[in-house]
Figure (tube, rainbow, N blue to C red):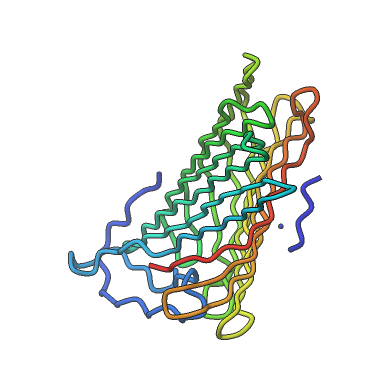
Length: 261
C-alpha cells in the first residue's frame, strides 16, 4: 500500500592518509560525500552538523477560522567513517479554536562505513499521533546499508535490517513484535537551484503479515538565497492495522520556508 512517487559496527584498525572532504554543492547541501570519509581525522576536522530547519503555517479568519503550524528538520554530521543523522516533524492544527490534529515524529540513525560504499547502521524512531489514537509508537533496530551513488548530482542509498517495534494506543492497547526494516534515500539535483528528494522506511512484522508500518517524505526544494530554501513537502505515514475507526494513511502536504546550516 505504501506506493510512493519515486522506493555497531567494528572499528577499522589501520590509519590512513587524511584527505579533507570536498565542499558540498550549494544546490545540494544534503548530498554529503561518502567517498571522502576516512578512518581518522584531526580534531580541527571533526564534522559539524549540517542540514536545515523548515517552518510552515496557514491562518484563516472569518467564515472559517483555521490554523496549522508545521516544523520539519534534518541534520547530518560526518566524522571520518562515522555518520549521524537526526530528523523530526511537528504538526499542529486547529479549527474554530479546537485542536484538530497534533502529531510529532522523530528519527535518529548512526552509520559506520566498513567499505567505500557499504555501512552498518543502528536506528531509532518515535511517533505520536493524536488523531490516529497513537499514544506512542517506537522502534529500534540495526542492519546494513549501501551508498550506491553519492555525488553532486545524485545520492542513492538503500538499507535492510531488523528491529523491535512497539506501539501503544490511547485506549490502552499495546502491541510489540519483531520487524524487518527496509529503507531508501534518494536525492537528485535537478538544477543549480532545485532538488528533489524522497526517503522512507517500511516495517513489516515477523509475527503477523498484516502488521505493516511505514513512513516516507517526498519534497522539492528551491534555493532562495545562500542560507534560505523553500520546500514543497509530502509526509506520509501508513499503518496497515489501525485502531477501529481510523484510516490506514495519514498525509500532510506542506509548503515551507527554511534555513540551511
